[in-house]
Length: 355
Image (cartoon, rainbow, N blue to C red; front, top):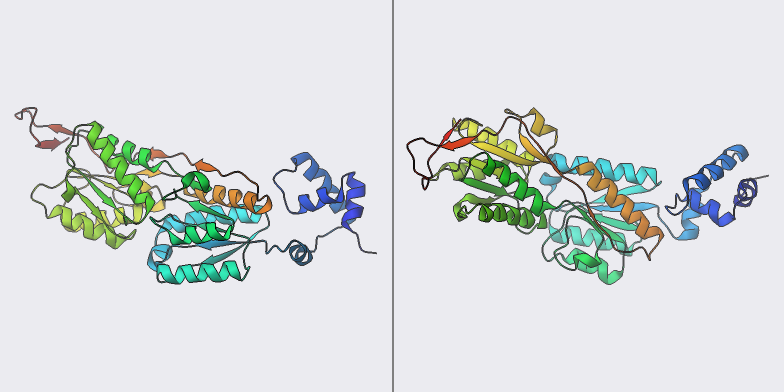
């Protein structure tokens, strides 16, 4: 005779509904109760029927991941493999599968999401970036469909659960690090201004310059794709200026790798002639030549906490909206050096010497 949930509940001395919640790994069940129920299941040799449970609850036990539209960025940039590790860990822990979607354009991605939602292929979605005027977020809110954003939503952020770094503060700190090293000619290499992460980091860069009474030069602010090529194109343009910057803040390690290779081709030495601070602290930063000083944004945790938050919403639609900020930390390596005014210069000069 088959063992049932009622048999497990009787042995564990709990209600059948509690057994169901333990099987679903519900966050509101205590660890002690979970252990007691799992021990009873093991003693009785009970194995839950996942298909039957999904049909009964109309749940797919699947999370949808909405990747950025450009395939090159997704498959080349280590950020996405690391955030996927965090999502995978969170999903596996809660017995959810992952359904990944992307498209060659924003429109293709949007249509793929509509098919996922209307076809009831997933229980909820994680958006792996946040765009300015994102019609995808507007669609999901109209449908009242569970979703979480990695990044800060462009508007109504207090009404949308999202997991992010304090990107304004992180970039302000990265820029101040160069200012503390004596740099005043600091250039910014960012991603698309359609992405909130770029908007916030540009804001942090400007805040740091303003606080230090350093003029903001438009020719020192460039944008490109989060790819090696994006960094190559940007730094080539900066090095062609009559007044070259003495330091760079780059919003992505893969872009920074392109920056380093181009500087090497141009015969510009890092950090002797120009200092570089990057973002994300992926393995590339440690392996580059020279190793990059980079802001660690705990990418794994971004993915893990986004998954945990989404499952909480899926399993309890009354779950309150959350803003989860993942900490950051600057990891110092060999890509920066101090710069001081030349002894013959007065206080108003912009000429410096690397030491």
